[in-house]
Length: 125
Image 1 (cartoon, helix red, strand yellow):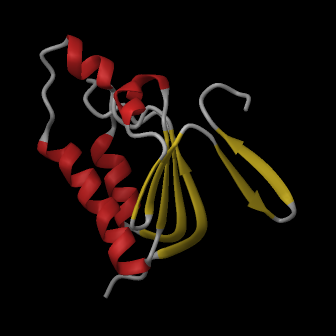
Image 2 (spheres, rainbow, N blue to C red):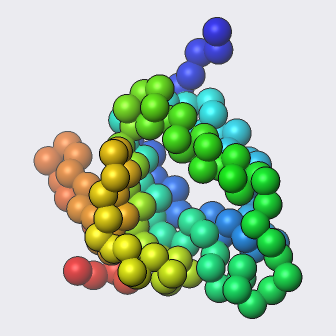
């Protein structure tokens, strides 16, 4: 059994799944090596603009990224907060959305150590 590094909260942003510059494999490997109570995906996780305008297709490694997220939720009860970014504007019809341990939102305020941390892609609420 492989020991995994524990973090109470992990924040990832600008992964841009679907673009040629996405480092999907590296991010997926990182997530497979950790466990966390909360994972905040702070915008532009999927690059809907690139997927729509280019010949780049959804790849198996992108699906693997989401399977890893599902395993975190299933095995460790990780809460996932997906903050909609400008490149994931295709989510507008869903926001706000909650299902099981995942929430899709426009803005999120994370409270830690008596402080508030704003998570959004606009810089204001």
